[in-house]
Image (cartoon, rainbow, N blue to C red; front, side, top):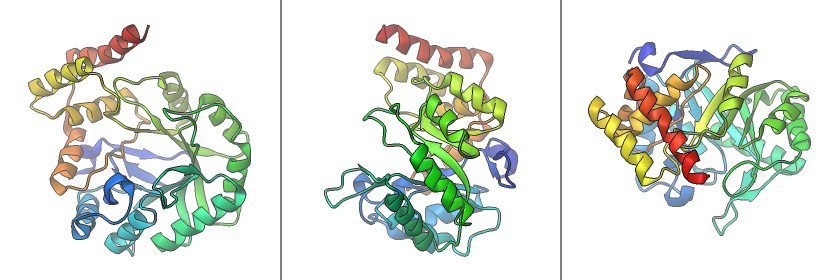
Length: 297
């Protein structure tokens, strides 16, 4: 695929890291529930290699996926890494044996987590490390993240982290972190139906900071899904492709990291970068969020 078909290019602010706007999220490479090895380890390796050969150069991962499994698969599939590949990981959680997701936010936890990532990816430094605030069940939660961001900044000063990002955070937490260090990306829950971060996205765009939405199809009502399906049907595309294309249209600082364990589904996701949305389609899709607000109120 040519570069233009993956949504264009984006350079993280203050860095030499330039990526295609459609990347790959590695969470689904682990087993069911993001736990243990996948049913098809060879298939997982194949998906990663196919993504990179198709032009993807932004891979999002974490050592608490599996745990450890996803990073080990990335290393097996892609090491030694292509020079243009940007690997982004996150710290802030751990997976005890009951398979739950628990905060791991002490300086010791964060430092140990970084060294797990470095070891399992076989890297001496990681391009971008996000501090993943655990927040509430459904999203971010206010509260200071200064201690955790300061730990990441200290690890950066030691040369183990090149750049710092945030995940599952509020606008106030972004500002708090920016008072400590440069932030190159924010990764939050955002999609056609859940647009609470509209103002934040525009603010980050003015600063040239990347916004990376997760759950691009999460939490849709049947009514919202039917609108999306109608638009997709007219375009001869899948609902997921339309949802991804809308995100690319939404703002030039939005980067996508759709995940899959299937090569066929990978190519479907990447093809979203070629989808053209008409003004009418964009109006219909923008109405999905307005309908959600009306229902909530």
